[in-house]
Every structure is written in structure tokens, then in C-alpha cells.
Amino acid sequence: MKKSKLSSFGQSRICPICESNVGSAATKCLVCGAELANDDIQSNAEIPASSEKVRKSSVNVPVTVIIGAITFMVLGGLALLLVSSGNNPFLESTATITPSATSVPTFTQSPTKIPTKLPTSTSLPPIVHKVIEGDNCILIAVTYDVSVQSVLQLNGFTQSCPLLVGQEVLVPVPTATPAPTITSTMVPLALTQAARPVHVVSAGESLSSIAAYFGVSFKSMAEVNGKLPPDYAISIGESLTIPIDMPLPTSGPTPTETSLPPYPAPNLLNPSDGQAISYVEQAVSLQWTGIANLREDEVYLVTVEDVTSGKAKRIQDSTITTRYVLNVDMKPSESVPHVFRWSVVTARQVGVSSEGLPLYEPAGITSEVRTFTWSGIGINITETSNED
Image 1 (cartoon, helix red, strand yellow):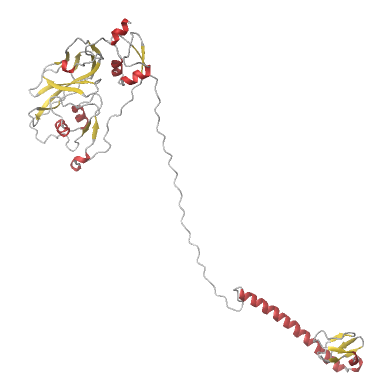
Image 2 (tube, helix red, strand yellow):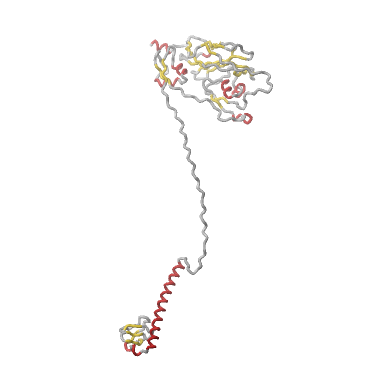
């Protein structure tokens, strides 16, 4: 590279190329890069005043240009960085409408219903029964309306159940059985046979009492369930269909006959409640007091049931007297006493079945239910225990 001649003013020099001030000992211009020669030094005194002004003006211009160039490069770099990041400062910003958030309705939670606790049944202490003459486990169980097996288990007795007069026997408290209820009232005309409820027979019930409870015709009750006279026999645990779509007929506007009020319950006389019939007896005479006079179509219906027998041994017969003889056909064959239940109700004939047998319905209130025991040939258990 060609070396440039310099102009010097005492301790400072001027680059002849770009006219920038350089040091007195500099060999290269820092601004334009020209090489400086020492023999080209010019004194400041040799330069006129006008030339000095021109030099000063020439010196200031390149520095300003350099500073502007640097500033432009910095600004250009910043602009390029903004554009690459997606924020272009040279584009006019378009206002974007931001939809306001739609308020979602809030729901207040209703208080949670706390279920009401049902009362729990508390087990009751057993009943203490003191044995008297003629008592046995079967009679005690029937008296307190509990099963014989529960009495045997509670006292640790064997099946023979030996008892002594004056002995204390524990009897479990009987469980109350709720009465049958109809949960809803239905229009009879809208009912079909499929809608008829079913009732399970419990102890002490008869076909007539069940018909009266549900307010249906005794005749309809007997026909629907296939019960035939004279006994219309039903057994404990049997399921009976209730024809509630065949209610009792209502009296018309001009009845031809005034219905009679129901008769009172017959008063049972013999045997007494809980009486033990000797095994030597071949028949049992049932007696009661009747009403003043029976009408021509009225009878007494007598119901007798052996509740100890494993089979449903039950009879229902009619009579116009106040006495009914239970013959040897109902007598148990084993020596263990059997418990019998019996009751009487006044009944009225309402028709004849297809077999020619009379059909009856209750005409009054059923008597109380009494019990007695009766055994076959053998030795009375209680008497043997007493002798021991």
C-alpha cells in the first residue's frame, strides 16, 4: 500500500487521505488505514486559517457519519430481531376485539337430607312360666304363641320335654306379626286378575275373617281359591288370592230385604282354654252358647285345627246345634300330646256350589280361639315327671 504524506502541526498530524488527526509518532491512520510517512509532515503554522476551518469541518463530518452508521446498524438489528419474533413495529396494529367471558350461572347445592334412623328392636328378656298340673312344652308354647322348638332350645330340654310341677320354664317373647295392609287404593273396575293381591294365612284366621278384612264377598273368596263347603278349609302359610275386583255388593236404591246386623260372637264353654284331654278319650265334645234363634238359612260353622301335626290337619263343619263332637278321626296316634285350636262363627248360606254343596258366608263375629291338648295311646309325659 502506498504511504500517504502527513501534515503535522507541532505534536499532532493530519492524515492526507481522510484529514483525521493522528498522533505524531503514528505510522498508520486509525480511521482510513492509510500508512503514514514521517517526511510528509506539515506544520500547523504553514496552513492558513481558512484551511484550518476547512480541516476542522472535514474532520467532524466523518465522525458523525461513522456514529450515524453505527446507530443505523444497531437500529436495523433491533428491527430485524423484532420482525423475526413476530412483532413488526412497521405494521399498523389492528385492534382485536376480545370477547368478554360469559358468566356461568352457579347453583347453590340444596342441603343433603339426612336419613332418619329407624328404631331398632331391643331384645326382651324371656318370660318365666311356672309349671302347673297338666302342663307340657307344647301347651306352654301354644299359650305364649311361640314355637315348641324355641322353648326346648332356650331351656336346653330334649324332645321328650320332662317337666315337674312348680318348675320354672323360660319362654321367649313372641315376635309381633304386623297385620296385612293394602298399600294403595285401586278402582275395582280398573283391576284385572293379575292385580289381585295375595294374602298368606296366619294362625287363627279363617276364610270368612280374611274376606271380611279385605271387604270382599265370602262367596267370591271361596270360588277364586277353590274352597268347598262345608269346611272351606285353609291352612297356616297357605297363599290366598284376594278378589278385590269383586267387592261386596252394595244395596240398591230399593232393596227387597233389609240386611240383618251381624250376630255377636258365640261364647265357648267346653273344653276350657288349655284343657288337657286324656289319651283314653275317643271323642271330644265342643260346646258353646248360641244366639236366640237361627234363621232357616243360618248355621254355626265350627273350625278345628291340629297345630302340632306336621300336616295341615284341619276341619270346618256346620251344625244348627250348640254342640259339635270331634271324633276319633282327629285323634293323634302318637303318645305326645297335640295342641288343637277351635272357634265358632254364625254363618248364612249364600248359594250352592257346582257339586251341590251349600256355600256359606259369616253372619256375625267369630268367637275367641281356644286350645286344648289331646294325645294317642301312651303315658302322659307330665304325669311321669311328677312321679319321678
